[in-house]
Image (cartoon, rainbow, N blue to C red; front, side, top):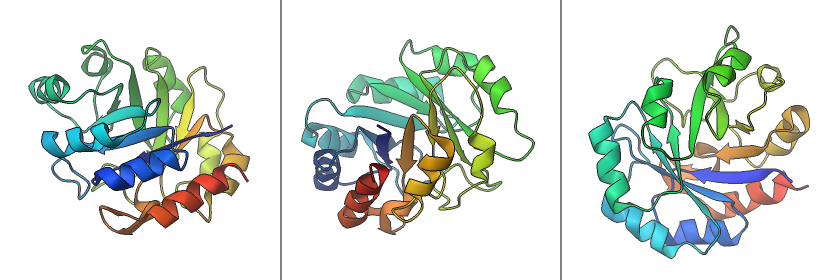
Length: 203
């Protein structure tokens, strides 16, 4: 069964409802240029509201080690997600499970990147946009995600309740990741869209 991550949550009650609806992982964005950015206090509130067995993922974009360490001291995260241009050493220095995100273009060599980041827990494949890191609402050519690599693939980029079933059939990813596709406005999650998205991952 395909795992589900709902990313960019900013409200504790919506995060809890998403987890209760079947989300396997909750993503918290620690990136001040994102409309989904949360501070440490808000992140703590969200995590405290979650039921057990939900993976708590912290997303960072080209963050300084000092900032990541400050967050880790205050927020009990299970997994780190690096969504910028981080190298292997940037990702491994925290001695924690991590996901490396890759913004996919036609010329992207996913196999080569997966080999380079072989210590990652998974590779997340997202849409490429030159002006932003994720949360674009844009899908990419899913055929570029149909690669034979040893790491689990998390498919992201413009996924919503209408296209997620087709995406799973084409790519057969380990997990799917939704953010803007389950929102009523940038940074505002819609629990009905989240429930429909999760339902369509198993239909």
